[in-house]
Image (cartoon, rainbow, N blue to C red; front, top):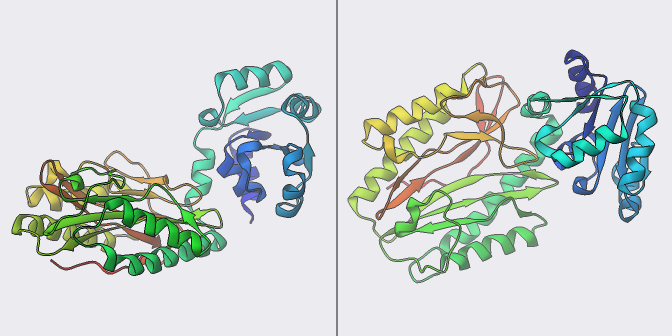
Length: 349
């Protein structure tokens, strides 16, 4: 069953007859069109139409087999009006401004508009074989680039230079960075989102590198914390504790496991090492067309793992003024349990 067919079934289950899709990731998911920021997608009982403008006429013809209407935005709503009259139509509240919703209501007075809620989030959590292949290929490329760059992470080098090398090598290989590369050395390691700065890496420090590749629209995500020289015993202790929590959480992945229970497992292990308060974020997240998507691996999550989900496991410990450690693997949930997609070496300190 295609994702478009799954979407139609989900709409029927929600009592809806169609949907107005505005999220670029969802437009790509359902149509294959890669410039979703300048497009909309309309699903009705009578069919599916991609709306974009003249700049993308050739591109849309190459990327999607869906009927495509090329027009300026006001003409789009006028064209769609006849198709949506009298329908109960879902819209993406998270990706539609109040002004845009008012415009829809003005253009389609006979249409009942209702927020889609989590319907598309649920659809996206379990990946197709094609999606898994794209994520796997993106991670393989990220592993390759990290292996090339790891010898460059040494005392006297700027964090920015490491990040530039990562981005340049990914681009040369046909990918882009999935997000701003994090290179956080020494005390900056206490910043979970410490994007690369002009700081010069020092001897005896830990360096956290969080990177991902985007390939064919899909993302990877991986973190490694590496040693430069000989870090002190406290940093080594923290590193070993985070590694223990990370590997224990990965080993517990399998269908039917509550995402919240994985977070608790890792958090309790770090708490046992006196680092519970230093774990300042959730254990992980799903990944796909977006870097962060469902399921959410946090204490309050109601998500349950299913085969075909691709998730991150990324516990960390952050000590202001001292440094920090995060170790992250990309993991596919399988029928039998799990498969780790990130193969970059983890240091043993």
